[in-house]
Image (tube, rainbow, N blue to C red; front, side, top):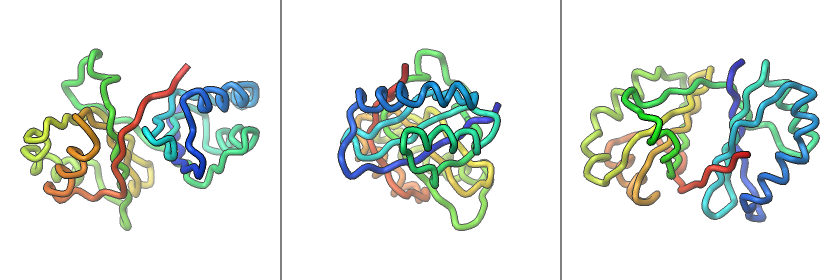
Length: 175
């Protein structure tokens, strides 16, 4: 089953307990529509979140999300791309998220070439790439890094000339 990603913003900050409560409230409908909530990446200020789901199709996720009152306009199918040498111990170590948007479809190789060319910027700031979620339409990407803080990632991305919509520190919320 493919993975789907939902980008959300909130006027009122959420806590991890709020995210778990939403997942619990939607659990019955998620089960009915065979949607698995994998995890949510909640910004440290509680105002932004990216949720990961696995389901047969996007419409199943949209239907399930309606039951908890979630806006599904920023729901997109995508693929997961881990750093090639990623070990199990590092898999959950990401703490900073970068959202990317592209006017025209791009290839993963094009973005990887930019990142490779700017690798010294990441190294200089102790920033380590962990994984990416890449949209099927090739116009969206969420990249996860382990870093001292979001500012280190922001500076490295800017210096490397990477396309960036926003950068924020997060915590993973899952059952």
